[in-house]
Image 1 (cartoon, rainbow, N blue to C red):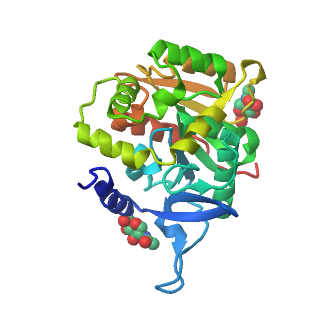
Image 2 (tube, rainbow, N blue to C red):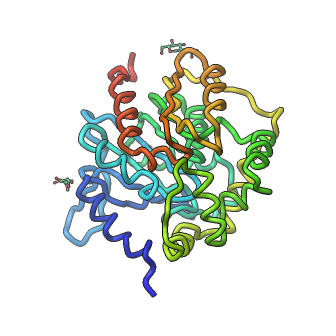
Length: 315
Ligand SMILES: *[C@@H]1O[C@H](CO)[C@@H](O)[C@H](O)[C@H]1NC(C)=O
Ligand SMILES: *[C@@H]1O[C@H](CO)[C@@H](O)[C@H](O)[C@H]1NC(C)=O
């Protein structure tokens, strides 16, 4: 039987092509490859059959990098945001290592490793400065990028995420949701498990036929072993967490009904991160706020991007 999720892939690729982004894989280090969706005008072919090479993005279109969460890769996560952004912005959508087509033979499973790979990849693509939008796991990677490479990040939009997954937040969250481990919650291996994840991640109950759940499991949850290790690599000990001082503007854009990372956590972070941080809640939306209320989310995102001062790294 055909896989209902897999057969949609060519359609998504076509829609993305119409929106002006195309897929391209780059070698980060020997053995590490990262897949990016990037502005088609940055891809060049010298002859018809040669491999495309990339050029730096149009200096008049600010770069926005949008980073996915744990249960899907870049395009599936951001399908509703990419199109509306490409007119004014150079949009880069990475697949983090072990998601989409991205792989590595490195044993490192830390968010720091993801951040380092992403930054190396962006530099190879000629991107020196960008706004980063990060959802959930992608938000933790975004925070790491800003901590390690502050000069590269103009500003951040963070949704449904935290600075680092401490053991106490992890325990509290899972206990509140009735799951025994983050593996059970975030790496479901059955239709029942995936339904449980979707019901926790959304405000309204979405209805899909079982078939679709099954096909989604097959397509989106490959590299299971490595992803389990990524989850383990996420937990840090409470006492080891320090809050870095971020010079950037940070906008915390949240689903008010997020049950995984509650609005209170966003409010706390807003307070901890200081004067250059703002928080905004979107009503009737859970963790998957960008999918549940795509238009509102995109509108808020665009408003924040438009409010940023024109970038001048020299100043
Ligand atoms: C990029 O995609 C847009 C939208 O589909 C299209 O109008 C444009 O011609 C494409 N540019 C290149 C260089 O392929
Ligand atoms: C907030 O941003 C301003 C302007 O970029 C900067 O001078 C200031 O140090 C920032 N504040 C914090 C707490 O990082």
